[in-house]
Image (cartoon, rainbow, N blue to C red):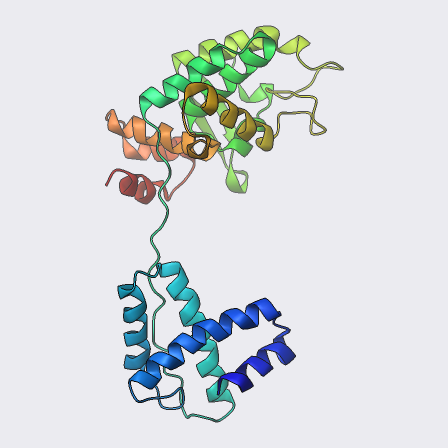
Length: 277
């Protein structure tokens, strides 16, 4: 029954040789398991399928890989059912193996401080801008796309808060802490001469075509700072700083609803709760 299925995958779905080899391996293991139980794909039961998945888990297979195996098994049984080779599909009521959600790579407060100190050691206007970017990311929990698209008009006259346009065009007010305000003040002093050309509305202008610093450049700068700070670069990203902002605030007793509002993320409660487990 395997070969007719693979022929269908190749002819009707244009499966590549690599994909067909993967199906052959995964389904070969499944059919071998069934044979050891005295069954074949034509008379396999839901209990047989579950037993196979349990066997894969017992062998240490990752849930994501087991889910791939189950996907192949589902397609095989769907094929057999549609072809009239069996009257039912034993996989129709079987859930995929639960895959654990990757938690953010949280940074300690000491590591964030090390990053900021590394930024302060950068010379010239580039260093001043980098400190402001980093302090603002950590002090506000902004998404990197929100940060780079900030205009000067988003900054309140007294520089105590930002008006941020987030997902769905929704606006929210985000307060700015003292250290971030000081970093912004230093940046605004050198900003006029940073990017040549006519005045620009962006808070963080650059020579990029967009006129403002790009998310790719922010990510690259953070990786460079991580090296300077003695932190594995793989642990650092704008998204990680966003979660550090939230988790550190909560650790110091901040109200969860207030943190949610600042983040502009209604689902952040579950993510932060899991990160503290």
